[in-house]
Image 1 (cartoon, helix red, strand yellow):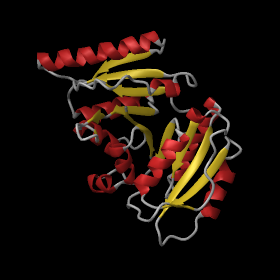
Image 2 (cartoon, helix red, strand yellow):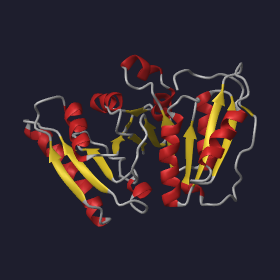
Image 3 (cartoon, one colour):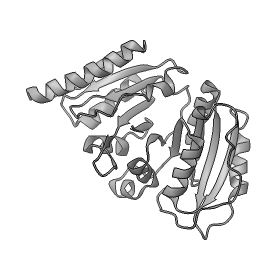
Image 4 (cartoon, helix red, strand yellow):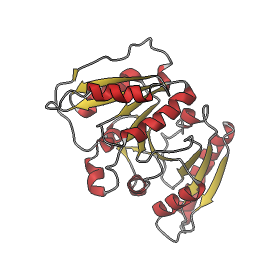
Amino acid sequence: MDDTSGGHGDSFLRVEGANDEPPRQRNVLVLTDFSEKVHAALTFAAAYAQASRGKITLLHVAKPEEADRSVDLSQLVAEYNEQAPCDWMLLQGDFLAEVSNVVQNLQPALVIIGSQHLNTPELYKKSLARTLFKHLRGAYLLVQEEVEEVPFQRILLPVDFTDKPECTHDWLNLFAPFFACEVHLIMPQVNENDLQEAIELNREKIVQILEKRHIPYQEFTVPGNDEYTQEIIAYGQEVGADLLVINSTRSPEDFYILESHERSLILHARQIPVLVVNA
């Protein structure tokens, strides 16, 4: 998903109503531009919907000159409908505005994006996924590879020295009730006392939340022989991590900001899905 869309917000087909079952907070919204990575996104969506008894909505926001893709959407829904209840929406208009409206109406637990365009800085800057998690509150799962096993079990959570007072780690509610989660806290190697104290304060905050919810966890401080990003990914590959969580920071201008190492994680964590949480 690379290009921005234009138009006037015309809806081609149906939007779900307020009385739909199952509960709306279990909805999974999957965004597609019909790249091959949509199957990777739908694999994760089906796993989540099955575990939570939720529903998948597949959304495509078309460009004004684009041909009708309703047949393609119907085929995708038919392919995954046996795994979990599926429906689809086809809209035309500004990408950010249309997705924002759908998110407001559906209130999905997750917005899942299958992307093959986040592995270079140039493509990352143009990505529609980046546009979403820069502007919209919510949880955005970026998927680049399919999985063979049940996901959302071994979760990487980097703990740095950045103060994020708005971060309450409510994202745990998305997974802990439905999956046997284990959280791996990854700390950087630092020498400055002030930074070490900030890391410890953030670690203690997270540990209290995990222990209160009876979620098992492990702790690991990287050796500091390489970049923090690379050591996080190497550790994740070693333990077979299937989710990497990044909590953004809210700017005074109401944008969601990612630190440089967090942007680097998105660029390099190809085999590990990345959950960007905008609190």
